Length: 239
Image 1 (tube, rainbow, N blue to C red):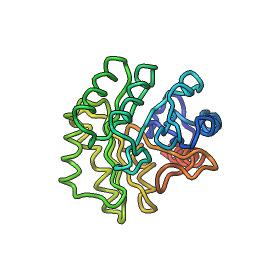
Image 2 (image 1 turned 90 degrees about the vertical axis):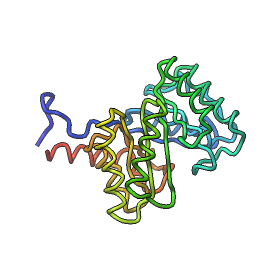
Image 3 (image 1 turned 180 degrees about the vertical axis):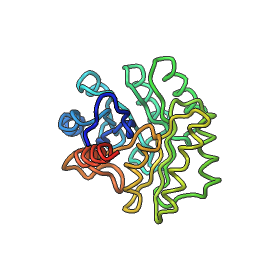
């Protein structure tokens, strides 16, 4: 069954290709190969030996999301927090479409970035990751409510799944997110969580993440962009 223009897409969420590399040249090369299939591109500043925003501005044909993930949340940036956030502030000033800021960031720094993003027309993603386990349903709901109160444009909750029950708890957050009006990115990492990376799009998820073709990606269980597009197309055509 072929999708037509008049038929509603059952998987309308965005697919973001997460890009990492030691240099801007490495990331740009991956980005240029992935751009055609991506809705947006995530530039992982924390993976660069010398993080820089400018090389990416105006160089790619898709909206850019800048992330400078702290080491304390599974990333590679180990400098001081003022320096880390300064790169994201620069991205906002230079017209980034999105920036990602961790929920656990000091609230003074986090709130300033979220406010600056809103003033500049950049969407802010307030994120929370657990690379070890998936918390209880009440704990996940508390995180979601904290994200809502932060004033960010979008929430992001990503955990490590060890069972299908973990996956269901995380995906179920989309129900509450819709009720409070917060666009939400929510899925699980790891082999058990792979299905959630696709399913979240059909459950109202704002976005999922994929790896560039031929690249291992930035998190356990990430599907390549080509594979993701094939799966989503087949599922949509089956509806």
